[in-house]
Image: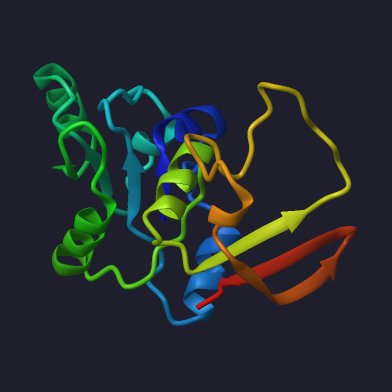
Length: 182
């Protein structure tokens, strides 16, 4: 599982609590009990007090860049199992994913966001599938989070193309899966 640093801090995401339902589903599907947890922060700025660092049930990797100061790297190294520099000013995601495959045997990666991380993965063509839950709640405004933030695709003609793979209704919500158009 991969997540941006701000998303980890705001939502206490990436199984900061151990995720019992998630653990049982993984075991049922023949996967490892807990996934590798990967945090992305180009600047290396991650609050060392967030819940993810308090629960040590699976390895934590931080992907960062050379923008991270020596002090930030030191703090990260004391809290994470591995800190990997993957670029100068921006994360080089293709290289980072090759490293994850070679060093950690990562073949599939679930991204929990946020919008800037999603945007970077869309722009580098690394998203094969989107799992999107549609619920009957509306939020909005200039500061509301979206699925893809950052620089994005300024023109509709440049947008990533996906197709509906499945839709399932459950307790008033729609769980949708979209796959990349090839």
